[in-house]
Length: 84
Image: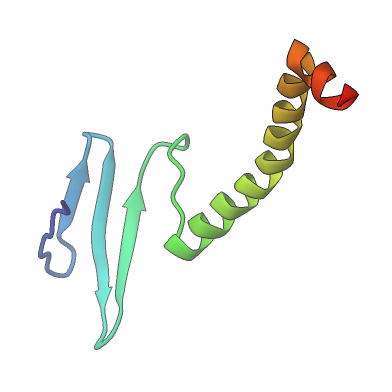
């Protein structure tokens, strides 16, 4: 469930006592936001976040596949499969 808020120009919302989002400009089809947050909070546009997430998945996938092979090779039953 999402929370939907309306804000006017220069009005803000506060998230978790340490993130402040302020509407700084309104155009006919765009809104400009100012985000004040601690440096350890990652702030990305959705398309950038999705690209980063996809890249992380691609990097993790080969490692996960190698892990499965290691687990299979560590089982005693694998030797029987290769002998057949």
